[in-house]
Amino acid sequence: MKFSLSNRAIPASMLAAKALAATSGDFSVLTMNVAGLPEILNGNDVPGDKTANSKLIGSKFAAYNYDIIHAQEDFNYHASIYETDTHPYRTATSGGVPFGSGLNTLATFDWINFTRVKWSTCSNASGADCLTPKGFTFMRAKIDEGVYIDVYNLHTDAGTEPDDLTARSANVKQVADYIDTWSVGNAVLIFGDTNSRYTRTGDSIRTFAEQNGMTDTWVELIHKGSIPTEETICDNPSTINTCETVDKVFYRGSALLDLTATYWNYESSKFLQSNGSVLSDHNPITVNFTWSAGASLRQSGYWGGPHGDWFSDVPTLANKTSPKVSALTFHGASRLDSVGLTLADGTALKHGGTGGTEATLALDSGESWTAAKLCQGKRNNETRNFYIQATTSSGRTLEAGTSTDDCTTFTAPDGWGIVGFLGQDGDEMDQLAFVYAPQ
Image 1: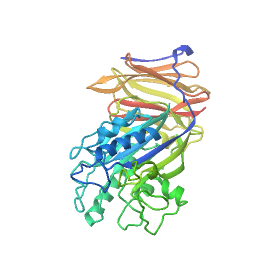
Image 2 (image 1 turned 120 degrees about the vertical axis):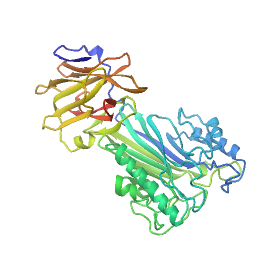
Image 3 (image 1 turned 180 degrees about the horizontal axis):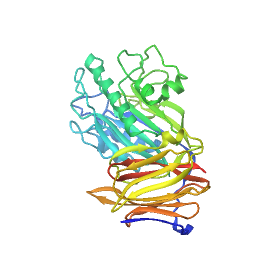
C-alpha cells in the first residue's frame, strides 16, 4: 500500500510529456455495404464473381486510402477484401453467415474499446434479418494523441413490412441509448447501412438528431440543412448526390473536439469493375471532416482496461468558465480505488469505489495539477489502474495505490492543467484519462 503527499520537487526529466501532438487536422470516412452474402443466398444483382469482386473492393480500399472504412455485409468473402487491402488497423471478422454480423472496420487510425453488440429486436417479415447476429459495433478511434472519436458502424433491419419498421426503429433506438450511456461528453460518428429513408413513414432515422444531437452529413452538405420531403431513388452507380440512399453518415463534436463535415460524395464511379459494372448493390459514400482540439477543454490518452461503467466530467466542466482545482483526493491500497478533486467553486468530482486509504492535497493559490503518472496491472484477468501520482506546478506530489512496472505519465500542455477525469470505473479505477483546461 502506498499513499503520500510531498513538497519534494520532481525533476522535469522524470515527467514523460503526453501533450497533444496536433491541435487540428482532417480525415475521411467511407461506408460501403460490400454485398458479401453467399451467392446461394443473395446475388445482390451484382455481375461477376463475388470472390474477384471482393478482391477488387479491397484493392480500391487500399488505393483510395480512406481513413476509416465501415463495411456491412462483410460475410463470406471477408478474406478476399483483406487480402488486397493495406490499412494498418482492421477488425477481425466475427464470421460468415450465419455466425457473423457482417460489420468490419478498416482504418489508418488505431482504436480502443472495440465492442460488437447484437440487435435486441429483429424481423424476418421481408427477408432473413434474424439469420445472422446483425447489430452495431463501437470503437473509440484515436485520431491523434489525446484526440478520440467514438465511432459506430451499424446495419439495421431491412424491409418495409410493419414488423420490419418496428424492428428498425428499435435498432436505431438501441444505438441512440448506447450513445447516451457510453459516449457521454464525446465526439461521435455513426455511419453504415441504416435501411432508412427520411421520406418513408415509420422510419425513425431522426432519432439520432433528436436524442443524440447528431447531424446527417447528406442533409447538411447536399441539402443545406433541409430534410427532403419527396423520395428520390438513386441509380447505381449514382451520378448525382441529391438522391437519397439508406447508407448514411452522422456526426457530432464535443467540448473536447470541434468537428466539421466539409465534403460529401457518392464514390460509385471509383468502385466499378473493369467493364463498368458495379461491385455492390449499394452506392458507397465518403465524407471528409476537419477537426480542431477544444479551445477550453482537451484530454489525455487512456490507461487501464475497458471494464466498468463509462464516466466523463466533460459535460460538467463544459459549463464552467476557467475551472481551477483547489484540492485532490485519492483512495488506494493494493490498487487504485478512486480518484477525485474539488474545484475552486466547490464542485466535487469523484470516480471509483469506496475502498482504500485516503490521500489528500490542498493546492495553493496559483498552483495547478500539471502531470499524472498511472500504473496498470491485472486483477482477475482484467487490466485496471493500480497507482496514481499527481504532480503540481509547484512540484508537490500526491500518490495512492501500488506501483507496477507498466506505467505512463500524462502531462498537460503548457499553460493548461488537469481539472477532471473520464474513463471507466467500478469498485476500483479500471480505465482513466484526464481533462485539461487553461490555467
